[in-house]
Image 1 (cartoon, rainbow, N blue to C red):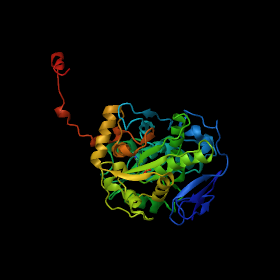
Image 2: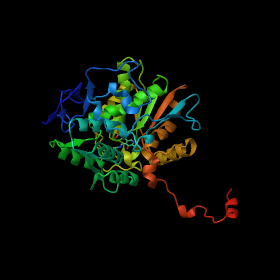
Image 3: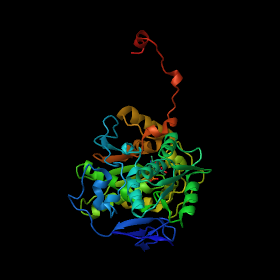
Image 4: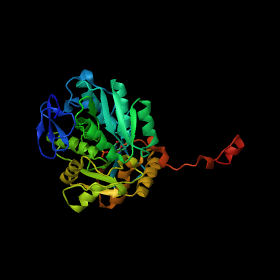
Length: 402
Ligand code: F0G
């Protein structure tokens, strides 16, 4: 097995517990399990976080050895917006963490800046990923910024047009795979496992998770050093829920707080293998073939980090639930038309879930929904017939509409 060397961290397999002090080229444990990065010294203390600087303001909590190699486009530092018009229930405060304001319009940039920095440190030349769209857009942008190549595999005909355009405009080699995301990921992992020149930037890459955990640090700071009661987020491959849980758990371990939030993961009904697992009480995920949902970002039947997600939900006293496409689209409209925040369908899933859960949330709860990506990337899901819009040619006609 090919290994890469390490600095102030080690990697531990989440499944079998094996530790690595060097990074396997495949990004995976020999047993096939998912690795987790464990910092071995230099834990952050109060005052170490440089607030308002985004991901790299938390560098004391990140695995970076050479700050001159950082590949950044100013990711993170996204707003936490209090809902003013959508009321969950009496005295419940709802906040939206608007990750669509990252450089490429999704939360992926938080993880990508750390993974691509790592790629630069070890001299990798080519980034590879399989993607439902946002990872490919982000990987392509950071490859461009870092002077590397990107090869991205996407399920043919199944990713949002805006995301495809991003990958192309940033100069990536885009390869379509006949089949779904899970097939694309399998093909990519098979090819990359022994090829040292390829650097995998899917969320199986533990450096990605390190970057994404900074979303938790930001929320804590934005709430005035408070941990919310609930963090609700969409789940696809299950990297992000694992990352937020890691971030909140570390804040507790390092003594910033003694509380962690309940983690609530939301899947689309047509792509909800993790919800099925959670409800069954079993301990092995059953893969879904041909998952289907309007929320193409989370159209995933075989989530790689399912074990981590299940742990996050169980350890935090949270839950996993699914929502229908109709609920997702209604929540997307609601958020756009009442709070002015336009998110893509996957990112509206938490709002749809809140609508279901609202009667069971205790009074006075602070609820944070992670709006993972911008609606501008996936305009095709909003049915607009522009021919039916009013058309005028002079001011008198305009008056008819005012
Ligand atoms: N929301 C959006 C907008 C996403 O793009 C994704 C994942 C998720 C949520 C789910 O995050 O996979 O960490 O559970 N998109 C990946 C991609 C799979 O390829 O862009 P997850």
